[in-house]
Length: 420
Ligand code: PMP
Image 1 (cartoon, rainbow, N blue to C red):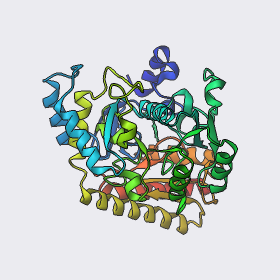
Image 2 (image 1 turned 180 degrees about the vertical axis):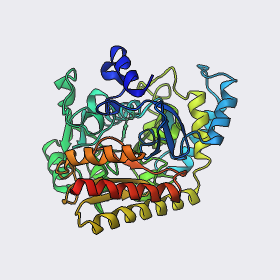
Image 3 (image 1 turned 45 degrees about the horizontal axis):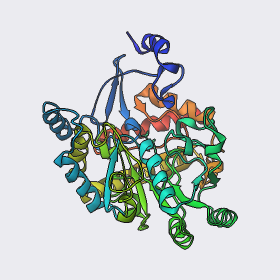
Protein backbone atom coordinates (compact mmCIF):
# COMPACT_ATOMS: atom_id res chain seq x y z
CA UNK A 1 0.00 0.00 0.00
CA UNK A 2 1.15 3.57 -0.60
CA UNK A 3 0.99 6.36 1.99
CA UNK A 4 -2.42 7.56 0.83
CA UNK A 5 -3.93 4.08 1.10
CA UNK A 6 -2.21 3.43 4.43
CA UNK A 7 -3.66 6.65 5.83
CA UNK A 8 -7.19 5.62 4.79
CA UNK A 9 -6.63 2.29 6.55
CA UNK A 10 -4.96 3.88 9.53
CA UNK A 11 -7.85 6.27 10.21
CA UNK A 12 -10.05 3.24 10.88
CA UNK A 13 -7.85 2.04 13.70
CA UNK A 14 -5.88 4.99 15.07
CA UNK A 15 -7.60 8.26 16.07
CA UNK A 16 -6.88 10.69 13.24
CA UNK A 17 -4.77 8.01 11.61
CA UNK A 18 -1.69 8.80 13.71
CA UNK A 19 -0.29 8.22 17.19
CA UNK A 20 0.60 11.84 17.95
CA UNK A 21 -1.28 14.89 16.63
CA UNK A 22 1.58 16.77 14.92
CA UNK A 23 2.08 13.79 12.58
CA UNK A 24 -1.25 14.36 10.83
CA UNK A 25 0.31 16.17 7.86
CA UNK A 26 -2.33 17.35 5.37
CA UNK A 27 -3.76 15.94 3.17
CA UNK A 28 -2.10 12.74 4.43
CA UNK A 29 1.22 11.99 6.07
CA UNK A 30 3.94 10.02 4.31
CA UNK A 31 4.52 6.66 5.95
CA UNK A 32 8.09 5.79 6.84
CA UNK A 33 9.84 2.80 5.33
CA UNK A 34 13.35 3.29 6.72
CA UNK A 35 15.87 5.90 7.76
CA UNK A 36 19.62 6.12 7.61
CA UNK A 37 22.01 8.98 8.32
CA UNK A 38 20.38 12.26 7.31
CA UNK A 39 17.75 10.59 5.09
CA UNK A 40 14.26 9.32 5.73
CA UNK A 41 12.63 7.17 3.05
CA UNK A 42 8.89 6.67 2.69
CA UNK A 43 6.86 3.70 1.47
CA UNK A 44 6.25 5.54 -1.81
CA UNK A 45 9.95 5.43 -2.60
CA UNK A 46 10.73 9.11 -1.84
CA UNK A 47 13.80 10.04 0.12
CA UNK A 48 13.96 13.20 2.22
CA UNK A 49 16.80 15.09 3.86
CA UNK A 50 15.43 14.98 7.39
CA UNK A 51 15.47 18.08 9.62
CA UNK A 52 12.71 16.76 11.87
CA UNK A 53 14.86 13.88 13.13
CA UNK A 54 11.95 12.36 15.06
CA UNK A 55 11.48 15.78 16.72
CA UNK A 56 14.99 15.89 18.05
CA UNK A 57 16.43 12.60 19.32
CA UNK A 58 18.46 11.53 16.28
CA UNK A 59 21.40 13.85 16.83
CA UNK A 60 23.82 11.32 15.30
CA UNK A 61 21.53 10.74 12.34
CA UNK A 62 19.32 7.69 11.86
CA UNK A 63 20.56 4.14 12.43
CA UNK A 64 23.91 5.15 13.86
CA UNK A 65 26.10 2.03 13.42
CA UNK A 66 27.42 2.00 17.02
CA UNK A 67 23.96 2.42 18.48
CA UNK A 68 22.58 -0.32 16.22
CA UNK A 69 25.38 -2.70 17.09
CA UNK A 70 25.17 -2.12 20.87
CA UNK A 71 21.38 -2.45 20.85
CA UNK A 72 21.59 -5.69 18.84
CA UNK A 73 23.97 -7.13 21.41
CA UNK A 74 21.69 -6.10 24.26
CA UNK A 75 18.53 -7.39 22.54
CA UNK A 76 19.67 -10.98 22.56
CA UNK A 77 20.44 -10.65 26.27
CA UNK A 78 16.90 -9.57 27.06
CA UNK A 79 14.91 -6.37 26.69
CA UNK A 80 13.33 -5.85 30.14
CA UNK A 81 14.26 -7.40 33.47
CA UNK A 82 12.40 -5.65 36.28
CA UNK A 83 15.66 -5.63 38.24
CA UNK A 84 18.52 -3.12 38.06
CA UNK A 85 21.45 -3.30 35.64
CA UNK A 86 25.02 -2.00 35.81
CA UNK A 87 24.46 0.01 32.64
CA UNK A 88 21.97 2.24 34.47
CA UNK A 89 24.75 3.30 36.82
CA UNK A 90 27.08 3.88 33.88
CA UNK A 91 24.61 6.16 32.10
CA UNK A 92 23.68 7.98 35.33
CA UNK A 93 27.38 8.66 35.96
CA UNK A 94 27.75 10.02 32.45
CA UNK A 95 24.82 12.38 33.01
CA UNK A 96 26.12 13.49 36.41
CA UNK A 97 29.59 14.15 34.97
CA UNK A 98 28.20 16.29 32.17
CA UNK A 99 25.27 18.18 33.64
CA UNK A 100 26.11 20.92 36.17
CA UNK A 101 23.01 20.54 38.40
CA UNK A 102 22.89 16.73 38.29
CA UNK A 103 23.89 14.80 41.41
CA UNK A 104 21.55 11.86 40.81
CA UNK A 105 19.25 10.56 38.07
CA UNK A 106 15.85 8.82 37.87
CA UNK A 107 15.32 7.28 34.44
CA UNK A 108 11.75 7.28 33.13
CA UNK A 109 10.21 6.64 29.71
CA UNK A 110 9.40 10.01 28.18
CA UNK A 111 9.78 13.74 28.54
CA UNK A 112 6.17 13.89 29.68
CA UNK A 113 6.84 11.56 32.59
CA UNK A 114 9.97 13.48 33.49
CA UNK A 115 8.26 16.88 33.78
CA UNK A 116 5.25 15.37 35.57
CA UNK A 117 7.50 13.89 38.24
CA UNK A 118 9.81 16.91 38.47
CA UNK A 119 6.80 19.13 39.19
CA UNK A 120 5.57 16.68 41.84
CA UNK A 121 9.02 16.64 43.39
CA UNK A 122 9.26 20.44 43.47
CA UNK A 123 5.82 20.72 45.04
CA UNK A 124 6.76 18.18 47.69
CA UNK A 125 10.09 19.87 48.39
CA UNK A 126 8.53 23.29 48.84
CA UNK A 127 5.16 22.21 50.31
CA UNK A 128 3.49 24.60 47.86
CA UNK A 129 1.19 23.90 44.92
CA UNK A 130 1.41 26.57 42.24
CA UNK A 131 3.79 26.46 39.32
CA UNK A 132 4.75 29.07 36.75
CA UNK A 133 4.95 28.12 33.11
CA UNK A 134 5.67 30.29 30.08
CA UNK A 135 3.07 30.89 27.37
CA UNK A 136 3.67 28.60 24.43
CA UNK A 137 6.05 26.32 26.32
CA UNK A 138 5.45 22.60 25.93
CA UNK A 139 6.35 20.27 28.74
CA UNK A 140 4.52 17.14 27.61
CA UNK A 141 0.92 15.99 27.53
CA UNK A 142 0.00 15.75 31.22
CA UNK A 143 -2.70 17.79 32.95
CA UNK A 144 -0.48 20.19 34.91
CA UNK A 145 1.13 21.68 31.84
CA UNK A 146 -1.47 21.27 29.11
CA UNK A 147 -2.36 24.91 29.38
CA UNK A 148 -1.91 27.14 26.35
CA UNK A 149 0.74 24.77 25.07
CA UNK A 150 2.81 24.87 21.94
CA UNK A 151 3.85 21.85 19.85
CA UNK A 152 1.06 19.55 18.64
CA UNK A 153 -1.28 21.30 21.05
CA UNK A 154 -0.74 24.80 19.63
CA UNK A 155 -4.15 26.37 19.13
CA UNK A 156 -5.71 24.00 21.66
CA UNK A 157 -5.16 26.12 24.75
CA UNK A 158 -7.01 23.82 27.14
CA UNK A 159 -7.76 20.22 26.31
CA UNK A 160 -11.18 18.95 27.32
CA UNK A 161 -10.75 16.48 30.13
CA UNK A 162 -8.17 18.52 32.00
CA UNK A 163 -9.82 19.58 35.28
CA UNK A 164 -9.85 23.29 36.06
CA UNK A 165 -8.85 22.36 39.60
CA UNK A 166 -5.54 21.17 38.18
CA UNK A 167 -4.75 23.98 35.77
CA UNK A 168 -5.75 26.61 38.33
CA UNK A 169 -2.36 25.92 39.89
CA UNK A 170 -0.51 26.55 36.64
CA UNK A 171 0.21 30.24 36.18
CA UNK A 172 1.09 31.50 32.71
CA UNK A 173 3.34 34.39 31.83
CA UNK A 174 5.11 35.57 28.67
CA UNK A 175 8.67 34.35 27.99
CA UNK A 176 11.55 36.81 28.30
CA UNK A 177 9.55 39.26 30.39
CA UNK A 178 11.08 39.99 33.79
CA UNK A 179 8.29 42.32 34.98
CA UNK A 180 5.68 39.58 34.52
CA UNK A 181 7.74 37.20 36.64
CA UNK A 182 8.11 39.75 39.43
CA UNK A 183 4.43 40.61 39.31
CA UNK A 184 3.17 37.02 39.42
CA UNK A 185 5.50 36.09 42.26
CA UNK A 186 4.35 39.12 44.26
CA UNK A 187 0.70 38.29 43.61
CA UNK A 188 1.16 34.69 44.73
CA UNK A 189 3.47 35.21 47.67
CA UNK A 190 4.51 31.97 49.32
CA UNK A 191 2.43 29.67 47.13
CA UNK A 192 4.70 29.07 44.12
CA UNK A 193 6.61 25.79 44.20
CA UNK A 194 8.37 25.95 40.87
CA UNK A 195 9.13 27.79 37.66
CA UNK A 196 9.41 25.36 34.77
CA UNK A 197 11.08 26.65 31.63
CA UNK A 198 12.43 25.45 28.31
CA UNK A 199 15.69 27.46 28.41
CA UNK A 200 15.35 27.78 24.63
CA UNK A 201 11.72 27.54 23.62
CA UNK A 202 11.53 24.79 21.02
CA UNK A 203 7.81 24.19 20.71
CA UNK A 204 6.74 27.52 19.25
CA UNK A 205 9.44 27.58 16.62
CA UNK A 206 12.63 28.60 18.37
CA UNK A 207 12.95 31.41 20.89
CA UNK A 208 16.24 31.97 22.69
CA UNK A 209 16.30 33.55 26.13
CA UNK A 210 17.22 37.27 26.20
CA UNK A 211 20.61 38.02 27.69
CA UNK A 212 20.32 37.81 31.45
CA UNK A 213 16.80 36.29 31.55
CA UNK A 214 17.87 32.89 32.86
CA UNK A 215 20.22 34.52 35.40
CA UNK A 216 17.33 36.69 36.53
CA UNK A 217 15.13 33.60 37.00
CA UNK A 218 17.86 31.88 39.00
CA UNK A 219 18.14 34.90 41.32
CA UNK A 220 14.43 35.47 41.87
CA UNK A 221 13.71 31.78 42.49
CA UNK A 222 16.45 31.60 45.13
CA UNK A 223 15.14 34.75 46.80
CA UNK A 224 11.59 33.38 46.94
CA UNK A 225 12.21 29.73 47.83
CA UNK A 226 11.01 28.52 44.41
CA UNK A 227 12.44 25.49 42.58
CA UNK A 228 13.86 26.31 39.17
CA UNK A 229 13.22 23.47 36.71
CA UNK A 230 14.90 23.51 33.31
CA UNK A 231 13.03 21.35 30.85
CA UNK A 232 15.91 20.25 28.64
CA UNK A 233 14.04 17.52 26.79
CA UNK A 234 15.13 19.23 23.56
CA UNK A 235 18.28 21.13 24.55
CA UNK A 236 19.75 18.35 26.70
CA UNK A 237 22.85 16.83 25.03
CA UNK A 238 22.02 18.82 21.88
CA UNK A 239 23.63 22.22 22.33
CA UNK A 240 26.43 21.27 24.75
CA UNK A 241 27.52 18.25 26.79
CA UNK A 242 25.82 19.79 29.82
CA UNK A 243 22.87 21.19 27.82
CA UNK A 244 21.49 24.72 28.12
CA UNK A 245 22.69 25.09 31.70
CA UNK A 246 26.27 24.71 30.51
CA UNK A 247 25.66 26.80 27.39
CA UNK A 248 24.13 29.71 29.32
CA UNK A 249 26.04 29.09 32.56
CA UNK A 250 22.94 29.06 34.77
CA UNK A 251 22.38 26.11 37.10
CA UNK A 252 18.79 25.15 37.95
CA UNK A 253 17.67 22.90 40.82
CA UNK A 254 16.09 20.20 38.69
CA UNK A 255 16.35 19.30 35.06
CA UNK A 256 14.30 17.05 32.81
CA UNK A 257 15.64 15.14 29.84
CA UNK A 258 14.22 12.95 27.08
CA UNK A 259 14.82 12.57 23.34
CA UNK A 260 18.63 12.34 22.80
CA UNK A 261 19.22 10.64 26.16
CA UNK A 262 17.48 7.50 24.86
CA UNK A 263 19.51 7.40 21.63
CA UNK A 264 16.34 7.02 19.56
CA UNK A 265 14.46 4.82 22.03
CA UNK A 266 11.82 5.91 24.56
CA UNK A 267 13.47 7.56 27.53
CA UNK A 268 13.24 10.46 29.92
CA UNK A 269 15.03 11.44 33.10
CA UNK A 270 14.72 13.68 36.11
CA UNK A 271 18.01 14.84 37.49
CA UNK A 272 19.07 17.46 39.98
CA UNK A 273 20.51 18.27 43.29
CA UNK A 274 20.86 15.55 45.85
CA UNK A 275 18.56 17.15 48.41
CA UNK A 276 15.74 16.94 45.85
CA UNK A 277 16.62 13.61 44.27
CA UNK A 278 16.80 11.78 47.57
CA UNK A 279 13.16 12.66 48.16
CA UNK A 280 12.18 10.25 45.33
CA UNK A 281 10.87 6.80 46.33
CA UNK A 282 12.24 4.47 47.57
CA UNK A 283 14.93 6.76 48.98
CA UNK A 284 12.21 9.25 49.98
CA UNK A 285 8.44 9.45 49.88
CA UNK A 286 7.73 11.25 46.58
CA UNK A 287 6.23 8.51 44.46
CA UNK A 288 7.65 7.78 41.04
CA UNK A 289 7.70 4.35 39.37
CA UNK A 290 7.64 2.62 35.99
CA UNK A 291 7.73 -0.91 34.57
CA UNK A 292 10.08 0.24 31.84
CA UNK A 293 12.11 2.78 33.85
CA UNK A 294 15.78 2.29 33.03
CA UNK A 295 14.87 -0.11 30.26
CA UNK A 296 18.08 -1.86 29.12
CA UNK A 297 17.52 -1.18 25.42
CA UNK A 298 16.98 2.56 25.90
CA UNK A 299 19.86 2.73 28.37
CA UNK A 300 22.16 0.91 25.93
CA UNK A 301 21.20 3.22 23.08
CA UNK A 302 21.66 6.25 25.36
CA UNK A 303 25.12 5.09 26.39
CA UNK A 304 26.19 4.38 22.81
CA UNK A 305 24.93 7.84 21.82
CA UNK A 306 26.40 9.91 24.65
CA UNK A 307 29.80 8.23 24.20
CA UNK A 308 29.96 9.79 20.73
CA UNK A 309 29.00 13.28 21.89
CA UNK A 310 32.37 14.81 22.75
CA UNK A 311 33.49 18.46 22.73
CA UNK A 312 34.54 18.21 19.08
CA UNK A 313 31.06 17.05 18.16
CA UNK A 314 29.47 20.16 19.72
CA UNK A 315 31.92 22.58 18.15
CA UNK A 316 31.28 20.98 14.73
CA UNK A 317 27.52 21.18 15.24
CA UNK A 318 27.73 24.81 16.35
CA UNK A 319 29.55 25.85 13.19
CA UNK A 320 27.34 23.72 10.98
CA UNK A 321 24.26 25.40 12.46
CA UNK A 322 25.75 28.87 12.20
CA UNK A 323 26.76 28.44 8.55
CA UNK A 324 23.41 26.97 7.62
CA UNK A 325 21.53 29.87 9.20
CA UNK A 326 23.86 32.31 7.46
CA UNK A 327 23.01 30.59 4.16
CA UNK A 328 19.28 31.04 4.84
CA UNK A 329 19.77 34.69 5.80
CA UNK A 330 21.60 35.33 2.51
CA UNK A 331 18.68 33.86 0.56
CA UNK A 332 16.21 36.08 2.42
CA UNK A 333 18.36 39.15 1.95
CA UNK A 334 18.69 38.43 -1.77
CA UNK A 335 14.94 38.37 -2.09
CA UNK A 336 14.36 41.34 0.18
CA UNK A 337 12.35 39.19 2.55
CA UNK A 338 12.43 40.39 6.13
CA UNK A 339 11.78 37.01 7.80
CA UNK A 340 13.43 35.90 11.02
CA UNK A 341 15.99 33.12 11.15
CA UNK A 342 16.18 31.91 14.71
CA UNK A 343 18.63 29.36 16.01
CA UNK A 344 21.10 28.13 18.57
CA UNK A 345 23.74 25.53 17.73
CA UNK A 346 22.08 22.78 15.66
CA UNK A 347 18.51 24.04 16.26
CA UNK A 348 16.78 26.45 13.88
CA UNK A 349 13.53 27.80 12.50
CA UNK A 350 12.48 30.43 9.97
CA UNK A 351 9.67 32.66 11.23
CA UNK A 352 7.61 34.04 8.40
CA UNK A 353 7.14 37.38 10.11
CA UNK A 354 9.06 40.63 10.09
CA UNK A 355 8.81 40.88 13.87
CA UNK A 356 11.71 39.72 16.03
CA UNK A 357 10.34 36.82 18.05
CA UNK A 358 10.86 36.97 21.81
CA UNK A 359 7.67 35.29 23.03
CA UNK A 360 4.59 33.32 21.99
CA UNK A 361 2.60 36.40 20.92
CA UNK A 362 5.44 37.47 18.63
CA UNK A 363 5.62 33.93 17.19
CA UNK A 364 1.91 34.03 16.41
CA UNK A 365 2.43 36.97 14.04
CA UNK A 366 4.02 34.50 11.58
CA UNK A 367 2.10 33.75 8.39
CA UNK A 368 1.05 30.12 8.76
CA UNK A 369 -0.50 29.93 5.26
CA UNK A 370 2.83 30.90 3.77
CA UNK A 371 4.51 28.40 6.04
CA UNK A 372 2.34 25.68 4.58
CA UNK A 373 3.48 26.63 1.07
CA UNK A 374 7.08 26.62 2.29
CA UNK A 375 6.68 23.22 3.97
CA UNK A 376 4.99 21.65 0.95
CA UNK A 377 7.57 22.99 -1.48
CA UNK A 378 10.38 21.62 0.64
CA UNK A 379 8.70 18.23 0.93
CA UNK A 380 8.03 18.02 -2.81
CA UNK A 381 11.69 18.75 -3.48
CA UNK A 382 12.93 16.18 -0.95
CA UNK A 383 13.41 18.08 2.31
CA UNK A 384 11.43 17.20 5.43
CA UNK A 385 11.07 19.85 8.13
CA UNK A 386 8.46 19.58 10.90
CA UNK A 387 5.10 20.48 9.35
CA UNK A 388 4.38 23.45 11.60
CA UNK A 389 5.70 26.97 12.00
CA UNK A 390 5.61 26.26 15.71
CA UNK A 391 8.15 23.45 15.82
CA UNK A 392 11.88 23.66 15.56
CA UNK A 393 14.23 22.00 13.08
CA UNK A 394 17.38 20.04 13.83
CA UNK A 395 20.68 19.19 12.19
CA UNK A 396 22.48 15.92 12.84
CA UNK A 397 26.07 14.81 12.63
CA UNK A 398 25.20 13.16 9.31
CA UNK A 399 24.00 16.28 7.49
CA UNK A 400 26.90 16.96 5.15
CA UNK A 401 27.84 19.86 2.86
CA UNK A 402 25.95 18.28 -0.04
CA UNK A 403 22.73 17.99 2.02
CA UNK A 404 23.04 21.56 3.16
CA UNK A 405 23.74 23.01 -0.30
CA UNK A 406 20.83 21.10 -1.74
CA UNK A 407 18.56 22.25 1.09
CA UNK A 408 19.56 25.90 0.66
CA UNK A 409 18.72 25.69 -3.06
CA UNK A 410 15.34 24.24 -2.21
CA UNK A 411 14.70 26.91 0.43
CA UNK A 412 15.54 29.45 -2.26
CA UNK A 413 12.88 27.92 -4.53
CA UNK A 414 10.34 27.91 -1.67
CA UNK A 415 11.01 31.55 -0.86
CA UNK A 416 10.46 32.49 -4.52
CA UNK A 417 7.08 30.77 -4.36
CA UNK A 418 6.10 32.53 -1.14
CA UNK A 419 7.04 35.87 -2.63
CA UNK A 420 5.07 35.41 -5.86
N1 PMP B 1 9.38 18.92 27.13
C1 PMP B 1 9.80 19.43 25.96
C2 PMP B 1 10.60 20.69 25.98
C3 PMP B 1 9.50 18.79 24.76
O1 PMP B 1 9.92 19.33 23.61
C4 PMP B 1 8.76 17.59 24.79
C5 PMP B 1 8.40 16.84 23.52
N2 PMP B 1 8.52 17.47 22.36
C6 PMP B 1 8.34 17.10 26.03
C7 PMP B 1 8.68 17.77 27.18
C8 PMP B 1 7.57 15.82 26.12
O2 PMP B 1 8.38 14.75 25.80
P1 PMP B 1 7.74 13.37 25.28
O3 PMP B 1 7.14 13.65 23.97
O4 PMP B 1 8.92 12.45 25.24
O5 PMP B 1 6.75 12.96 26.30
